[in-house]
Length: 284
Image (spheres, rainbow, N blue to C red):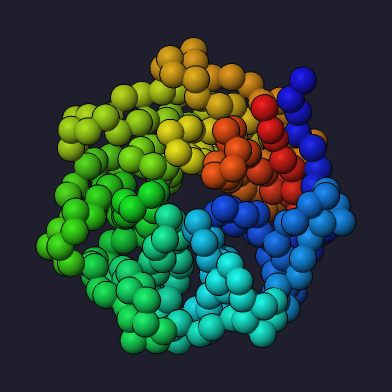
């Protein structure tokens, strides 16, 4: 029977990132890559106290410093010494990575795509001060405004943004390969079906929902109790329980859910950071 299994229990863990591999960030700035087995199979990649966030795509791992500086560690790069600086902008507020791409969001709402040349290779895609979050899935990029409006990048910098929704209840978005989902403050979850503004199908409406995650074509939700569910295809009733995790989610705990579809496996792997420390893995 499938169940959640702890693969680390370090109270210093504050964030996880999933690409083709699983990574974790400690409150000391230390970064680790999971190599297996559980508990002992973590390779340290860096230990910079300035590190504030990490993100991963299919090939690379990125870290953002509290100064706004960005660094990349390639798949064959050496731990500690193999990090390459790719930007040094103090306005950087967040990063998102997917497939072979990296994006950054500035405090001003500006969005940039990394084109491959360290420091100078950043293409401005938008500069809207209402932007509060970005999400990447496959080769698609989305942005969420403080008004709840959602936009998809269509390929032309600055002007190439198609509005998909404008609901003030929207608090989060999640993207998978050719899939976009949104979470409302009520716990309602919607899937984009392809028609701007009207093309949103409601999948659930549970007020206990606090987070969603997507990978490939799969969607997952996390409840404040720590319970996790996978969407199986039928709105409202089509949610398969993945069991109760040991640690309930709350505003005072660092809780996250992420999913990966490794190319050498035919199943998704779901990870959860349950509170400060425990990292849990679920395989069906």
